[in-house]
Figure 1: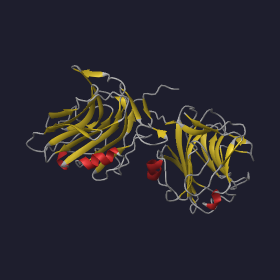
Figure 2 (figure 1 turned 45 degrees about the vertical axis):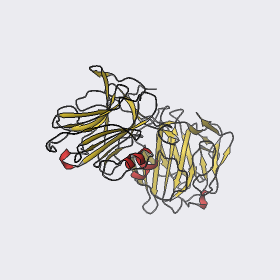
Figure 3 (figure 1 turned 135 degrees about the horizontal axis):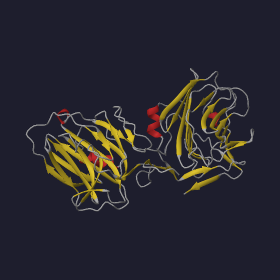
Length: 440
């Protein structure tokens, strides 16, 4: 596998998800930056909250005095700007700082050891009216300190960064997930709800899930740029492995829930290659090899292809890496015949098809005996929706495991230990010829 300096993963200890995903920083020079400022000046707000999930298992690489620091996230709390805020790794625990008119107010958690290979939710709040800074770790108040200043400063702050500070100091060696910035001071109830993964919408300025990209899901377009060797890695521990010889999964009754000939739809799944340069079919709907009679999704050589056997939507990039999980989503708008391709939640391409699908509503996964076409793919979390999902919807649910029926979700194959449809519509599949279910 190629050397990867900055990676995206997930973790079971973080959330109850099938997919273990987070951002991993190398402690050298990789980081995320957003030039769009979540907060331009402290004078615009009465308070703020900054929070991140953090897991660190190694000492930080840079020292100041006898302290090893690693910058988790913040906005110009060090460097050439006189005002800012941020949270850091401080030796074996966490700290938070706010800088007001070149005076730094610093709180830390000296009483607890956090280099324990566990995930911790680190929250800092700054109350500019009550003049207090507080640090919480896993909902527990670690320390608070009064702020002393004559007036709230109006000077502009610098860019928001994750993984290094604005002076390019204190590179972080840790794993990070779900960084948020709010223009409000969280209450103890907010902090408890956040720890239970309930979104706090009030005053949300920035939200980086760090689950495969650095898009801001707050709606404020404070999207980030990942620098110095950024790549994406995703680790899935439960999936279906196909042998490329004759095994496949079939559902003959999915047409009871969706008619692909007349309905708009979205198909999404996670896939990992085991070989390159070959055709690997993820799925088909239909059984006739003729124009518009079969829906085909999979790798054609090293490009991702979605086709009605006549019109092809094909990725521009090639994909040869056999060590990476990729989330693929295709939307098809029936009235306009427009197909769109998304990779890891990011829009890639769209085309208008010559005609709508006219074949049979029979689903086959991992291979199709009618064409003697079989794959060696690893597949997980295959979903069919009877609507065109937006990019925001795709990003919002691509790492989630649904435990109850969802609106417009007509089939949901987790592919973790069986071929059951967990959407509630009973579009169960049947495995043929020794399909293997993996639980690492």
